[in-house]
Length: 96
Image 1 (cartoon, rainbow, N blue to C red):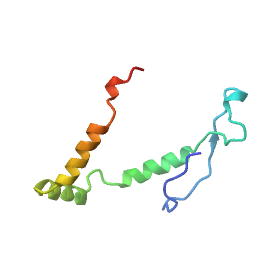
Image 2 (image 1 turned 60 degrees about the vertical axis):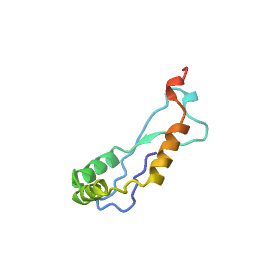
Image 3 (image 1 turned 135 degrees about the vertical axis):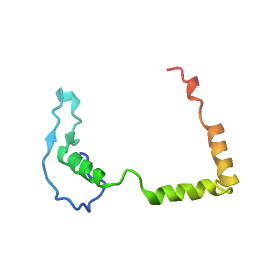
């Protein structure tokens, strides 16, 4: 079951549920919950997303300030990122 990430919504909650039918008795886990989709929650999410501006001026201003700061990112951050890249597995070597 997919639940909303926030319990404090300004929109009214609805309880329309569509359950997916298993294709065979073996497809449903024993004693486990059945898969469900809440289409009404997707509509609520889409409506809430439309209320969020596409460009957030405060975020753009913070990005401009960071880009203008010659000390950002710090040497320590750059070093940690470099170490993470060097220590990460080479996915091109994957034989699958």
